[in-house]
Amino acid sequence: MATFEFRNAQELGRVFQQHEVKYLFFGKSGAILLGYSDTTQDVDLYVEKQAANCEKLVAALAELDFRLTENEEQEIRRGKDFIQLRNGPFDLDLIFAPDGIERFDDAWKRRVEKHGVPIANIDDIVGSKQAANRQKDKESLPRLLSFQEWLRNRSNQDGLG
Image (cartoon, rainbow, N blue to C red; front, top):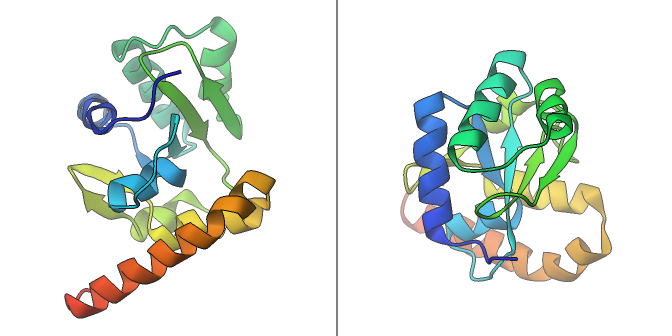
């Protein structure tokens, strides 16, 4: 299992832009792209659950050398809530219905553009982890909340908040 690296985000962003896939970096990988000091084993993406977008996603993943099974392609096309892909150049979690977020369009409006890729707002990332209420999230939430506060303070100091 390879660790998530910045070059993964760059390559994914480039290919998804070419295919016009509408998505957000999400979860810990999204927080890392915002400056969170941690590592993760996979890339988390929140993907818009529209049929045309899902079709574009299948094509983009193929270009990134993900070897999708027929079943995985069908799950993507129908926008299954959560799909783990472990058959490509890096591990990828596709999330079509994250805990704590009602609509993709709302999260899209709050997104941050950084490094040339769309990233979920830190409040959405933290809120989703809180709503999921998983043990692993409970253990990492104190550090993530501290980062969220630091990011807010920095944005306020820079006149962005």
